[in-house]
Image (cartoon, rainbow, N blue to C red; front, side, top):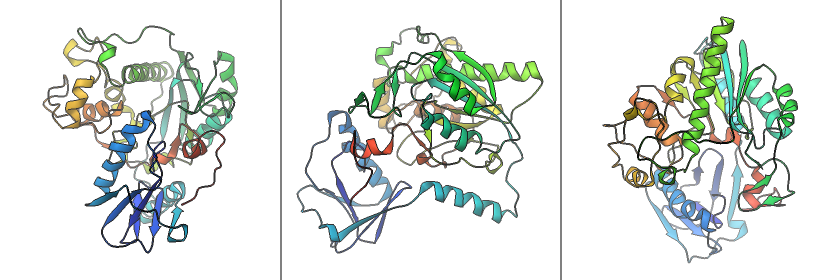
Length: 393
């Protein structure tokens, strides 16, 4: 169920158990009770996955179902007793868009169609065709925008490429180490098209934190502040473009450069223009991989990691001590967000962003399927290096 965890068999006696949006697990002849989770092979998790195995999996199931049973010493079902059927999230997403359009008499909910695409972050896999061609086909072309420009804010010091094949494969992280040069990006820029600007981030100097705060205290250590400084830069580049050329954008869609877009995001007019659109499941934070942001809200969105107690001149982060309180819904004194109580399920950079948006009364919706992007090839998540892409139940 979760990469790195031992094999689990999920049994729902009612017939079908839904895990996220992709897996429908259908079981028969499994006996009484409600939900049953079996560690079928009694294999321990790797240390880096222990949290996922112990906390995330049980948290997901607890939220999805009222009751559950954990059986670690039960015999696994025979192969003929349990089958797995995998639905296509892409087909469901596209089908929902078609139903939405038909139900509205062929009229989309929005006429806003001018999009600034911000590709921001460490280069990593971006020069690989599996990444940049998917950005071109499923994101840039998939939006069907009336006017679109692409703004890049990139860090060339990142050296991990998830889509570069199995050579130099790192089984612990699923990435190959590749040092990119500026010339490596030209094919990707040409393929994606609609080029507007490129800002290359310096190889040094993390954002300045507020007095008394140190990066050793932050969780994650640096990603939130560095990522959102890049978004501020991208927003500034977009603003400069609008002023210089007398144009205006309705939307800003930012995405990491190192992901593969698995299916079309859909016509930009299908998204109501009064809210932020991204991925948010019931068991985690707002996505830190991409977001579709109304242009008027982008300055607020991009400033999520600015420290309000220092008049915005420095950055902030969620410390490990604060995160422990956020797990228990007890973090109610965070500068710039209090008296709202910050609640984090895992602690990725999107946690602070979510409550920053709430504080500023910016509506958001997390209905885009998380399966729309992949940072690591699915075959490596399922089976590791060289694994077969076939799955068994």
